[in-house]
Image 1 (cartoon, rainbow, N blue to C red):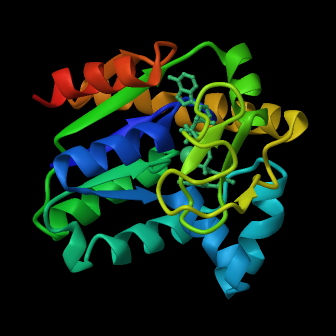
Image 2 (image 1 turned 180 degrees about the vertical axis):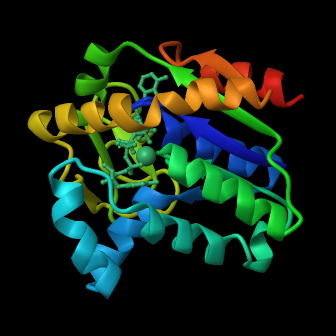
Image 3 (image 1 turned 120 degrees about the vertical axis):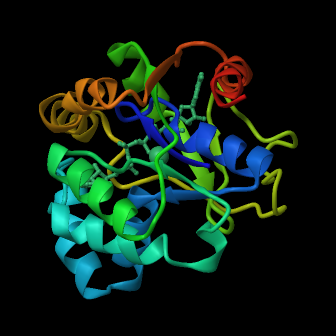
Length: 214
Ligand code: AP5
Ligand code: MG
Protein backbone atom coordinates (compact mmCIF):
# COMPACT_ATOMS: atom_id res chain seq x y z
CA UNK A 1 0.00 0.00 0.00
CA UNK A 2 1.46 3.35 -1.10
CA UNK A 3 -0.05 6.54 0.30
CA UNK A 4 0.31 10.30 0.41
CA UNK A 5 -0.64 12.39 3.45
CA UNK A 6 -1.37 16.01 2.54
CA UNK A 7 -1.82 18.94 4.88
CA UNK A 8 -0.33 22.23 6.03
CA UNK A 9 2.45 22.50 8.63
CA UNK A 10 1.27 21.00 11.92
CA UNK A 11 -1.69 19.15 10.36
CA UNK A 12 -0.50 15.86 11.87
CA UNK A 13 1.18 14.23 8.87
CA UNK A 14 4.10 12.98 10.95
CA UNK A 15 1.91 11.88 13.87
CA UNK A 16 -0.49 9.91 11.67
CA UNK A 17 2.27 8.50 9.44
CA UNK A 18 3.94 6.94 12.49
CA UNK A 19 0.63 5.31 13.50
CA UNK A 20 -0.20 4.04 10.00
CA UNK A 21 3.35 2.78 9.46
CA UNK A 22 3.25 0.61 12.56
CA UNK A 23 -0.32 -0.59 12.03
CA UNK A 24 0.10 -1.57 8.37
CA UNK A 25 3.80 -2.55 8.41
CA UNK A 26 4.77 0.06 5.86
CA UNK A 27 7.46 2.76 5.90
CA UNK A 28 7.08 6.47 6.69
CA UNK A 29 9.00 8.65 4.23
CA UNK A 30 9.19 12.25 5.45
CA UNK A 31 11.17 14.52 3.14
CA UNK A 32 11.30 17.10 5.96
CA UNK A 33 12.96 14.53 8.26
CA UNK A 34 15.37 13.44 5.55
CA UNK A 35 16.36 17.05 4.86
CA UNK A 36 16.84 17.78 8.57
CA UNK A 37 19.11 14.69 8.77
CA UNK A 38 21.09 16.02 5.80
CA UNK A 39 21.43 19.43 7.49
CA UNK A 40 22.65 17.75 10.68
CA UNK A 41 25.16 15.62 8.77
CA UNK A 42 26.35 18.67 6.77
CA UNK A 43 25.99 16.91 3.38
CA UNK A 44 25.93 19.06 0.18
CA UNK A 45 22.12 18.71 0.09
CA UNK A 46 21.92 19.72 3.74
CA UNK A 47 24.08 22.78 3.16
CA UNK A 48 21.85 23.89 0.29
CA UNK A 49 18.62 23.17 2.19
CA UNK A 50 19.43 24.70 5.59
CA UNK A 51 18.66 28.36 4.89
CA UNK A 52 15.54 27.53 2.85
CA UNK A 53 14.10 25.35 5.65
CA UNK A 54 14.83 27.96 8.29
CA UNK A 55 13.09 30.60 6.14
CA UNK A 56 10.04 28.34 5.70
CA UNK A 57 10.59 28.06 1.94
CA UNK A 58 10.46 24.92 -0.20
CA UNK A 59 13.67 23.33 -1.42
CA UNK A 60 14.03 22.76 -5.21
CA UNK A 61 11.90 19.98 -6.71
CA UNK A 62 14.92 18.06 -8.15
CA UNK A 63 16.40 17.75 -4.70
CA UNK A 64 13.43 16.00 -3.07
CA UNK A 65 12.46 14.00 -6.16
CA UNK A 66 15.99 12.53 -6.22
CA UNK A 67 15.86 11.69 -2.52
CA UNK A 68 12.45 9.98 -2.80
CA UNK A 69 13.33 8.09 -5.97
CA UNK A 70 16.38 6.53 -4.30
CA UNK A 71 14.58 5.87 -1.03
CA UNK A 72 11.66 3.93 -2.49
CA UNK A 73 14.08 1.55 -4.20
CA UNK A 74 15.21 0.31 -0.78
CA UNK A 75 13.97 -3.18 0.18
CA UNK A 76 12.03 -1.93 3.24
CA UNK A 77 9.68 -0.02 0.90
CA UNK A 78 8.57 -3.16 -0.92
CA UNK A 79 5.56 -3.60 1.38
CA UNK A 80 4.53 0.00 0.88
CA UNK A 81 5.20 3.54 2.06
CA UNK A 82 3.52 6.70 3.30
CA UNK A 83 4.78 9.91 1.77
CA UNK A 84 4.72 12.55 4.53
CA UNK A 85 5.37 16.02 3.09
CA UNK A 86 5.95 14.89 -0.50
CA UNK A 87 4.86 15.81 -3.15
CA UNK A 88 4.54 19.51 -2.34
CA UNK A 89 4.29 21.06 -5.80
CA UNK A 90 2.58 20.06 -9.05
CA UNK A 91 6.06 19.46 -10.50
CA UNK A 92 6.85 16.98 -7.69
CA UNK A 93 3.47 15.27 -8.21
CA UNK A 94 4.09 14.65 -11.89
CA UNK A 95 7.67 13.53 -11.23
CA UNK A 96 6.31 11.08 -8.64
CA UNK A 97 3.77 9.72 -11.10
CA UNK A 98 6.51 9.13 -13.65
CA UNK A 99 8.88 7.45 -11.26
CA UNK A 100 6.20 5.17 -9.75
CA UNK A 101 5.31 4.18 -13.29
CA UNK A 102 8.93 3.38 -14.13
CA UNK A 103 9.32 1.33 -10.95
CA UNK A 104 6.04 -0.57 -11.54
CA UNK A 105 4.44 0.83 -8.37
CA UNK A 106 1.00 2.35 -7.83
CA UNK A 107 -0.42 5.13 -5.69
CA UNK A 108 -3.35 3.78 -3.68
CA UNK A 109 -4.69 6.85 -1.86
CA UNK A 110 -4.08 10.49 -1.05
CA UNK A 111 -5.47 11.65 2.29
CA UNK A 112 -5.76 15.31 3.22
CA UNK A 113 -5.74 16.22 6.92
CA UNK A 114 -8.18 19.15 6.96
CA UNK A 115 -7.37 21.63 9.70
CA UNK A 116 -7.93 25.12 10.97
CA UNK A 117 -4.84 27.25 10.20
CA UNK A 118 -4.90 29.28 13.41
CA UNK A 119 -4.68 26.11 15.51
CA UNK A 120 -1.60 25.05 13.55
CA UNK A 121 0.53 27.80 15.06
CA UNK A 122 -0.26 26.51 18.58
CA UNK A 123 0.40 22.91 17.55
CA UNK A 124 3.76 23.75 16.04
CA UNK A 125 5.07 26.03 18.74
CA UNK A 126 4.22 23.30 21.34
CA UNK A 127 5.86 20.49 19.43
CA UNK A 128 9.05 18.67 20.43
CA UNK A 129 10.60 15.28 19.81
CA UNK A 130 12.93 12.73 21.31
CA UNK A 131 16.54 13.65 20.47
CA UNK A 132 17.47 9.97 20.27
CA UNK A 133 14.67 8.16 18.38
CA UNK A 134 12.71 11.10 16.95
CA UNK A 135 9.34 10.16 18.52
CA UNK A 136 7.03 13.20 18.38
CA UNK A 137 5.37 14.92 21.36
CA UNK A 138 3.44 18.11 22.19
CA UNK A 139 3.46 20.26 25.34
CA UNK A 140 -0.34 19.95 25.66
CA UNK A 141 -1.66 17.33 23.25
CA UNK A 142 0.79 14.44 23.43
CA UNK A 143 2.98 14.21 26.50
CA UNK A 144 5.14 11.18 27.30
CA UNK A 145 3.50 8.74 29.75
CA UNK A 146 6.28 9.42 32.28
CA UNK A 147 7.11 13.12 32.25
CA UNK A 148 10.52 13.81 30.70
CA UNK A 149 11.06 10.22 29.48
CA UNK A 150 10.52 9.09 25.88
CA UNK A 151 7.79 6.41 25.64
CA UNK A 152 9.61 4.65 22.84
CA UNK A 153 13.28 4.56 23.80
CA UNK A 154 13.50 5.84 27.38
CA UNK A 155 15.75 8.78 26.49
CA UNK A 156 15.49 11.95 28.58
CA UNK A 157 16.83 14.25 25.83
CA UNK A 158 14.33 16.18 23.72
CA UNK A 159 14.69 18.70 20.92
CA UNK A 160 12.69 21.41 19.08
CA UNK A 161 12.93 22.19 15.37
CA UNK A 162 14.74 25.34 14.18
CA UNK A 163 11.77 26.23 11.91
CA UNK A 164 9.12 25.88 14.66
CA UNK A 165 8.67 29.55 15.54
CA UNK A 166 5.64 31.66 14.73
CA UNK A 167 7.25 33.75 11.97
CA UNK A 168 8.58 30.72 10.07
CA UNK A 169 5.30 28.85 10.54
CA UNK A 170 3.47 31.65 8.72
CA UNK A 171 6.00 31.49 5.86
CA UNK A 172 5.49 27.70 5.71
CA UNK A 173 1.71 28.18 5.60
CA UNK A 174 2.13 30.60 2.70
CA UNK A 175 4.30 28.07 0.82
CA UNK A 176 1.58 25.47 1.47
CA UNK A 177 -1.25 27.58 0.03
CA UNK A 178 0.83 28.86 -2.86
CA UNK A 179 2.40 25.57 -4.00
CA UNK A 180 0.91 22.52 -2.27
CA UNK A 181 -2.84 23.17 -1.93
CA UNK A 182 -3.34 22.80 -5.74
CA UNK A 183 -2.48 19.10 -5.26
CA UNK A 184 -5.93 18.62 -3.70
CA UNK A 185 -7.60 19.35 -7.03
CA UNK A 186 -4.92 17.41 -8.88
CA UNK A 187 -5.52 14.19 -6.94
CA UNK A 188 -9.29 14.69 -6.94
CA UNK A 189 -9.11 14.71 -10.74
CA UNK A 190 -6.93 11.56 -10.59
CA UNK A 191 -9.57 9.86 -8.40
CA UNK A 192 -7.18 9.29 -5.49
CA UNK A 193 -8.34 12.06 -3.13
CA UNK A 194 -9.82 11.54 0.38
CA UNK A 195 -9.96 13.75 3.44
CA UNK A 196 -10.29 13.37 7.20
CA UNK A 197 -11.03 15.85 9.99
CA UNK A 198 -7.53 16.73 11.19
CA UNK A 199 -8.96 18.79 14.08
CA UNK A 200 -10.28 15.69 15.84
CA UNK A 201 -8.24 13.90 18.54
CA UNK A 202 -5.17 12.01 17.31
CA UNK A 203 -6.89 8.62 17.86
CA UNK A 204 -10.07 9.74 16.11
CA UNK A 205 -8.08 10.98 13.08
CA UNK A 206 -6.31 7.60 12.99
CA UNK A 207 -9.71 5.82 12.99
CA UNK A 208 -10.94 7.96 10.11
CA UNK A 209 -7.79 7.12 8.13
CA UNK A 210 -8.18 3.40 8.86
CA UNK A 211 -11.78 3.59 7.63
CA UNK A 212 -10.49 4.90 4.30
CA UNK A 213 -7.71 2.32 4.03
CA UNK A 214 -9.97 -0.58 5.06
P1 AP5 B 1 8.16 19.10 7.05
O1 AP5 B 1 9.06 18.49 8.04
O2 AP5 B 1 7.37 18.24 6.16
O3 AP5 B 1 7.23 20.13 7.83
P2 AP5 B 1 5.70 20.62 7.58
O4 AP5 B 1 5.04 20.24 6.34
O5 AP5 B 1 5.77 22.06 7.87
O6 AP5 B 1 4.90 19.80 8.57
P3 AP5 B 1 5.22 19.53 10.06
O7 AP5 B 1 6.23 18.42 10.17
O8 AP5 B 1 5.52 20.81 10.75
O9 AP5 B 1 3.81 19.07 10.59
P4 AP5 B 1 3.10 17.66 10.56
O10 AP5 B 1 1.94 17.74 9.62
O11 AP5 B 1 4.07 16.54 10.37
O12 AP5 B 1 2.50 17.65 12.03
P5 AP5 B 1 2.89 16.77 13.32
O13 AP5 B 1 2.39 15.38 13.18
O14 AP5 B 1 4.31 16.96 13.69
O15 AP5 B 1 9.01 20.11 6.13
C1 AP5 B 1 9.92 21.02 6.71
C2 AP5 B 1 10.60 21.84 5.63
O16 AP5 B 1 11.39 20.99 4.78
C3 AP5 B 1 9.66 22.59 4.67
O17 AP5 B 1 9.25 23.83 5.19
C4 AP5 B 1 10.57 22.73 3.44
O18 AP5 B 1 11.53 23.77 3.63
C5 AP5 B 1 11.32 21.41 3.42
N1 AP5 B 1 10.62 20.36 2.63
C6 AP5 B 1 10.14 19.18 3.13
N2 AP5 B 1 9.57 18.45 2.14
C7 AP5 B 1 9.69 19.19 1.00
C8 AP5 B 1 9.28 18.97 -0.33
N3 AP5 B 1 8.62 17.86 -0.70
N4 AP5 B 1 9.55 19.95 -1.25
C9 AP5 B 1 10.21 21.08 -0.89
N5 AP5 B 1 10.62 21.34 0.36
C10 AP5 B 1 10.36 20.40 1.31
O19 AP5 B 1 1.96 17.49 14.42
C11 AP5 B 1 2.25 18.80 14.88
C12 AP5 B 1 2.04 18.87 16.42
O20 AP5 B 1 0.66 18.76 16.71
C13 AP5 B 1 2.72 17.73 17.18
O21 AP5 B 1 3.24 18.22 18.37
C14 AP5 B 1 1.63 16.70 17.41
O22 AP5 B 1 1.84 15.96 18.61
C15 AP5 B 1 0.38 17.59 17.51
N6 AP5 B 1 -0.79 16.95 16.90
C16 AP5 B 1 -0.84 16.15 15.79
N7 AP5 B 1 -2.11 15.76 15.53
C17 AP5 B 1 -2.89 16.34 16.47
C18 AP5 B 1 -4.31 16.31 16.73
N8 AP5 B 1 -5.14 15.60 15.96
N9 AP5 B 1 -4.76 17.04 17.76
C19 AP5 B 1 -3.91 17.76 18.56
N10 AP5 B 1 -2.55 17.80 18.37
C20 AP5 B 1 -2.05 17.10 17.35
MG1 MG C 1 6.13 16.43 10.00
